[in-house]
Length: 538
Image 1: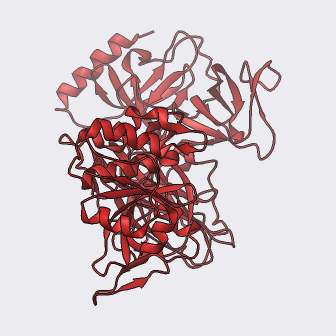
Image 2: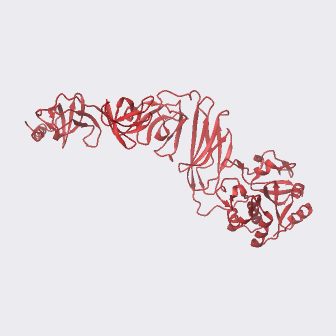
Image 3: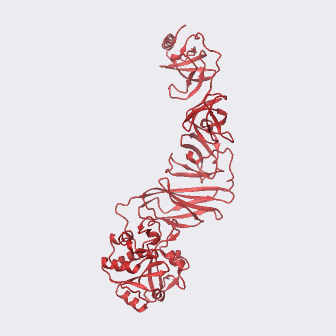
């Protein structure tokens, strides 16, 4: 028998003689045992496209170093030249049937239509079952042939019948639909990447490629333009090859933000557009993790959000219609660390979400801090504002004055008066003339504006009938006030009662807490005096 080395030399001489002209020479597979892998490229790590039984005849099309490009029964690929001979090997098992490899590596989804699939020790229906894989589970594929596939699941390796696998290689080029509500199509393979569009169960996608965690697809965005992007494998329960229930007119879901980037300490304004009779909700994620749980909204809702830390944020609107149609719209924004620090606002917003994690004794400032915010506002207006008078600093300085029923305001003001150099009195003042006199002397007043809530009386109106109020949590006032009205200037030298907090200049509704931020407005002097006030005199 003429061995492979001789055959290669002959071929090389022929190549030189023919000046690299194309040729096809017969050769035979000669392996020590088993079949010969034919690969898609001249590389031992490339995909195996077919296996050829030992002793089979092939046509050699080209020799590239240690690799030969061959053809076998109409199929072409590359084999190691060392396993070819110019004569049939003696005793070759030429009756062996070829094994067609249809996928090497990658993944697949179990598709039994019902129960679990047995994983066997060998590629034999009578072999021992080593484990079971649930229907729709995703498994790692080592090698898939027409009949049996070697897979890995739960750390165990075994064989399953290929007919029960939906191989990734079989999905390339297919048109599919999301199974469930909707999927975000992202610009890159990352949950933090920009969302190009969202597709629902009625919107077709063409699969371009499938990786371990991300699937590259082509689809149309909301404007009807063709886009290519990625959907997360973790968001896919299974593919549908027919549209789901969300057919007909597209679901309306749109979020508009006031900025793409803001400094830490700032607030973001947003507006929602969605279908009038749909179930709409908004949630916020930071670096891929939820930081604001879903909040119900309606079309036209305008709200604000104040992030508590820097990072990459995603605000997500989800709209679900009564007929089962659902869609989402996601917008991204970045919060940058403010090296200079945020300047103290004229009016603190106790309910803007920023104070949810700021402690005040056994509670937090969002829940129990109205007296602290009022003290901070008072110190600002007395010209004593500094880093030491910020609400969170005051809360750490005077935690001892928070009782079960709320802050003991008289004791708090007495202690702060000694520390910051202002005068206060033990008893409340209910005489309107004394309040007017205090204002004329530059004093301000802390008072229980409604049951369970403290605000600041900061000054007197020009006509002397109303008091200028600085309120850190006006929703509490608006909801609880009785026999009184909140007023704003009417622009003609007078005042008008407001029917909604939205009418007050600077109004901002914070979705995270479901309440308005701090506002300034007016109340009748008689109402303020009737509640009794505590003087803060410079």
